[in-house]
Amino acid sequence: MTQRIDDSPKVRIRHLRFPWPSAMAGLLAASYLLLMTEPSLVAFYDIPAEWFRTEVKFSVLGGFLALLLFDLHRYQRRYAKQKEELKEIRRQMDKLWQRNRELQLKAHTYSGHADKLKLFISDKLLEYIEYDEKFLHFKGIAAEVRHNGVISFDKVQTALKRAAATERTLPHHGSDSSRDPAAEFQTALDAMRYLWDLLDLSTADNLALHIGNLLCECEEHFVQRELNREEDTPLPYEPVYSPQLAAWRALGLVRPEPAPRPDGKSEYRLEDEQWTVILSPAGELLGNENHLVLLLDNLLKNAQFFSRKRSGKSGVAPISMTLGEAAGHAVLRVYNRGPHIEEEDSDRLFQLGYSTRRTREHHGRGLGLYFVNEIVKGYEGSISIHNIHTPETCYELKLELENDQVITHSVEVMLGDDGRPFCEALGDDGEEISRSREWTLPAALRSIDITTSDTQSIQRLSGFTNKSKDSRMDPGHPEHPHWRLVYQPRRKNPKLRFEPMDISGVAFEIRLPTAGHRLESGEAALDEDIDAEVERLDERFQVPLK
Image 1 (cartoon, rainbow, N blue to C red):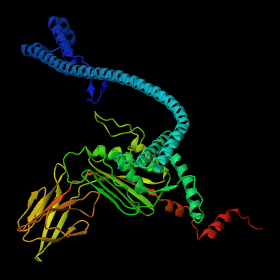
Image 2: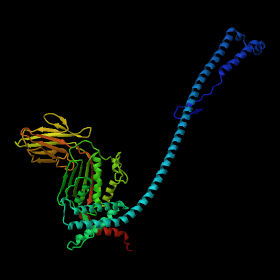
Image 3: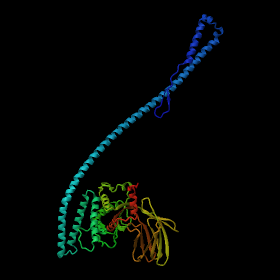
Image 4: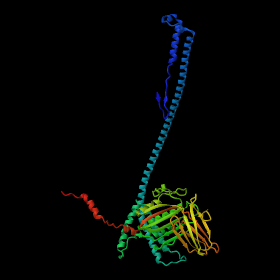
């Protein structure tokens, strides 16, 4: 009998065999003994007398004992083997029972997990059902708020307009000549309109569809105004606005210090320790200016929060906002120095309720970037996220001095274990590693040509003053400069210092089609092969003539 348990080798159960040799020898010895005691049997069978000699008797006895010992030895050996086999069977049976007990324990454990999972799913379903009921209840309240808010907003707006108009007609009295009541009323009126547009947008059933419908209405008014330029026909509202002014307004919501108002025609620059703002004139956008203000307000507040996550001073403003125009689109870019966005977070960043703000002091609600994405979709624009890395490259500095001497230095910028850049100077004086690189010049500095090895771009800096310290940032990347030069003029041995900047961070880039681009792209393009296409489609409907 053979049995296979688990992955163990075969175990063969051997039966104990009957001791045939010793039994037959015993029978023969008993017969021989009988013949010795019965002479009549010897005579009857005519057995020779030599069989009963002494040596034959001992031979019979010795053969019987030998066979008996042989059977005993074989029995003991087979019994020992069978005992070991029985032990192996018991061990395998114990192992099998132990495995069965483990499987039963796992089954009970998984059953408990399944019960917990069922309870968890049922609880979540109840939460979602409750959430849907609350959402519907919220929608009902929002509709009532919208209805009552229109009446209240009209009353407040009318009162503020009348107060501002009255203040403009009255002469100004008092010692505070800088205070302008009319301007204050106008500011309050603008804030009220922004609040109303914010509430109106947040209570809409579909933000993107709400903005898209508004853009269609504004586009219709914009086309009418373009077609009737000569006629002085008033429009119900202004269908376009300047993105430069909208960006300036959004900056005023997050920056405590007031900034001068841009004129909308020239480039607007604002630079301090916290902000780098470069707003170039761009084409007008359709829709409501407050929607773009809300979009930028959320992006700038997000940049402020994450810029504080990076410790240490880098020498450049941690937040920058730029505006430009490319291919008929207004391009807005908001950059903040700080930690990069993980790939798994970038796919969920614009989902409603998802937030990467996880601190004790602040827990994000996941609404800001959701509003940003919905507004961009309503404009039929695009939004992208870029992780900005501090570049590792080699710079070649060509210095032209006032004594017509030309000096060339090479500096390789590398990143340390802490992620901050450092300089590795290469030259005849050997290698030197430091956070910055400084040289002592034999004469005053006239100009510098800085060449980057990876892009082969050349930046020329000139007009250095010889009266006070002169600091220059990388002009090729004004929103986040890659390097800074500090020139210290002296009568003897002026000094020049090159510092690589730590610019690791995140940039959000938004592209929105301008009003002119939407108007041009809305025209149907003529297809030169339209006739051939019509004939090809008509072939299947032609009936062959018989």
